[in-house]
Length: 255
Image (cartoon, rainbow, N blue to C red):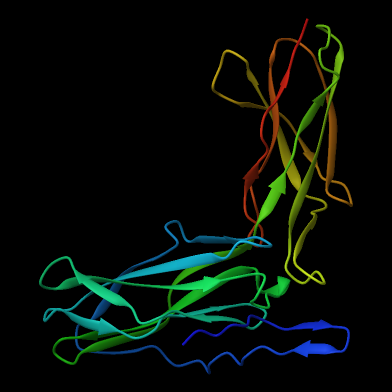
């Protein structure tokens, strides 16, 4: 069953409480059933923005000498009372002893009450049943990052510019504020290291020019010397709580 709440949000007189996270169970198993691989959303990173719903796919590979019979709902548990439960997994056999069980859950920032404190490292809890009544239960079968989506811009000016003159590259780094009222929105992300990169117009490869930090409102600004036509962009590597993002390159015409 879906739990359509993560954390708690209080807005004016309206208080929306989270469902309680299930009590922790000790890991356990019977027989030779083992979980060998856990993958969440392809790369173990889930980025949720401010408006679009996000479907999170969980894949768990398990083995037993008798084969895998099935799996229970996967629990996704994180900080800030973060909790999600997938639908019933579907298990597909890769061999007589090994199967991959997949299930998903959808998070909608317009409907689910996401707490900013829930961003960070999450764990996958899984119960797998074998055909001979063996089983394995792991509270932390795998982990992934549940992140606030980010946006990043870049603007190089003046344009055109004479060779040897100064170019100012401005931009802004923002990330999803899930708790904003009356609806989630992006807000400046301060104090973060962001790389300024450049590629010649004739090239497809960016190189890093320098690294700067976003100011108290997430704004970015730095200067470089004009040399050749090319594109400037900012690049943010991401943090545990916030997804990585690249700005779209801005072309500068050097005369």
